[in-house]
Length: 160
Image (cartoon, rainbow, N blue to C red; front, top):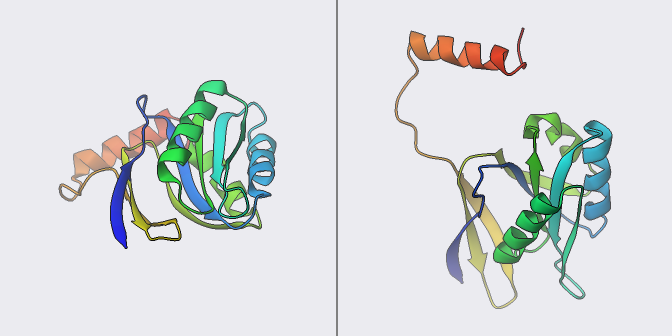
């Protein structure tokens, strides 16, 4: 077995969700979860099929996000993983809807940070062991940091 690191290509720091599911139906069901939760959602979704013809299945509403999802899915090539890139929205807007899709097994990360995916590769194929989402912790927040965090959440509309 080899352990590899695959860096997610995300040149514009778009929000993304990386997960794992168990069935080809994931593509249509995650699409429906996205558009029914955020009706004008701009996103691209790619899913690594792990049996039969083993294709990257894909769908979306935005060509740029779709191309980014496809490119990263091919780089991952990890069984039954899926990646969603989104524009003008945050993962928190759709995360619960995606987690409630019956065939979704897990979410590895939901972020706009740089992401490295730790992959195990055997003769049979590839699987995701985990992710590195962003950077290492640098300390404990101060009162000034607490105020900045609270202000940011209100500024972007997530708190009153």
